[in-house]
Length: 208
Ligand code: MD3
Ligand code: FE
Image (cartoon, rainbow, N blue to C red; front, side, top):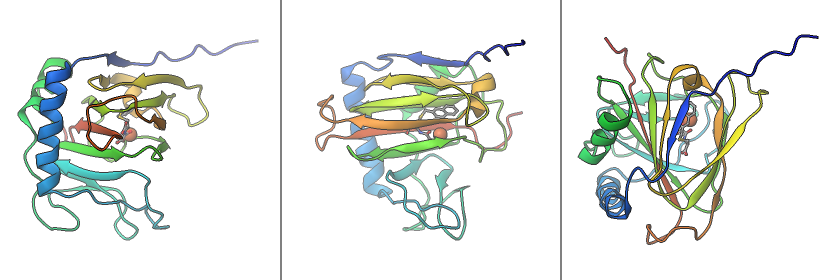
């Protein structure tokens, strides 16, 4: 009987890409972004079910979702109507250092997790170009993250993402199903209120 080979997962986990001082500087920069672009709670297309994660964005484009408009990128905050604040330079530096992509990121989604928040398995496919990687930076409490394959039912690998870790998703894994099973309370002292912040840098328009 033919047993299909497992497709290799093409992601790179870079533990402690940011040291404690850099994490503190980034947490401060994110707090400044959130003061200008306050967290909002997205809702699911069609059903309007709220996400358990609060979100904001920085950079030229931001990812939003609501019942009426569905998943999309837009240049303005869905509540204030103002443009997203610029991306902190440290994040652009992380992209230059680790993404292996000469085009710069256009969107940085900021996911804010409390101890009860999670993110079900999904694919990131709201971008016009899947050739560019996605780069994620984690701050605060540990998260149990999973990545599978191109089908929802494919086997998954689990990775604990800790404060200061970078994850780069590229090649075939760019369209892999993935999600956050849970955040482990009180595993980091970085954020005064606890919880976890994930910053996801993406290209949205075609790279050429
Ligand atoms: C694997 N965020 O915002 S980041 C998301 O920790 C999202 O907040 C998670 O999934 C979080 O869409 C995971 C790591 C990540 C980002 C994009 C991916 C993993 C990915 C794209 C393909 C495969
Ligand atoms: Fe995702």
